[in-house]
Length: 96
Image 1 (spheres, rainbow, N blue to C red):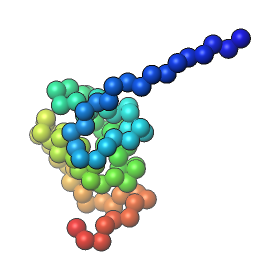
Image 2: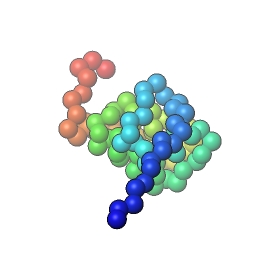
Image 3: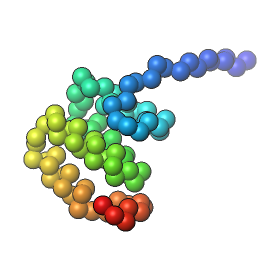
C-alpha cells in the first residue's frame, strides 16, 4: 500500500526586485530576505545559477546586493569579470 502525502504551498517570500521569482529559484529564496546574511558559498551558487540561466540583469542585482553587504575585493573582481564576459548561451541586448 502506498502512502499519500499532501503538499501545501508555503507562504511566498517577499520579493525585493521588480520581477517575480521563478519556482526554479526556490533554493535561493532565503537571499531575498533583507535581514538575512547568507554565507559566501550560497551567494556564489545563486550568482552562478543566474549566469547559467543567462540572466544578466538578475545577476547584476545579486552582485549589487552582495556589495551592499561586503566590499571584499574578491567580490569586486568577480563582478568585473562577469561584466566583461558574455553570458554563456544567452543573447546580449543590442543596445546597452
